[in-house]
Amino acid sequence: MPNNNWYETSEDMLMPLPLTEEEVLVETEDYTEEQNNARGRYPSITLPNNTNITVIPIIPGITMLGYVRFLNASPGEQRVDIYANGRKVADSLLYREFTEYMKVFPGWYRIAVYAAGTRTNPLTVTTLRVQANQIITMAVTGLRGDISTQTINDSRQWLSRNRAYVRFVQLSPNAPTMDAYWDDALVLAELNYGDVSRYLQTTAGSHNLKMRDSLSGANLVESPDVSVENGKAYTIYIVGDINDRTGLQILVPLEGATYLDFGGNIR
View (cartoon, rainbow, N blue to C red):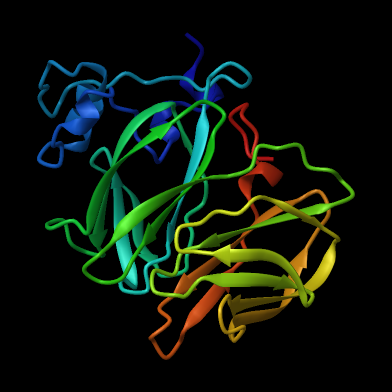
């Protein structure tokens, strides 16, 4: 085997190794990180804390990988900690903030979300399946007392160098059905909570975005300067509590399809 100093391995990844489909359904929070990782590969064996864990090399062009990032889109939880298979992968993630995309091996992951600084009474627990060459954003959503997650598959489509691409994801749990206006033109109608729109092609530059109530036409939130570039894909997230004084907010992150590859590197 080549010298570990010459290439990246699973030890260099923040995301842990996956569990089997059967193992991910079993309660794992009482085990250590090492035991969780080992049980993922040997589900019938409970191993002691000092067990040596297999290290998997990441060979560019050969090793199959996906990418995952997390978004705290819950206005009810200003900071959260996120664990994958017992390992903390997001520490005190602020409301409206994203993690970086993290390399992940294909397989099953048990995702537990906690109020920041706690490790009892998770806000929500779910399972995530990652496939090879997949790019995922997992959003923590909902209001206090009703927290959940939503898995959003990011684009892997071919991106023309002469166009920019945008889509809309509505993550405000108590906002009304809304329409999207791009430079005062209606481009999307009746977006509801949890909806993920198709991709729309647009020109590079600065654009005005308004989200309006589908019934009354009233402005719900506006962003007068959404800047996009050709050859890139963006997701427009609508987040917030419509009843809070801060209301709704718009997030416009660049999608991973623009700069990630699957040879073990970030472009």
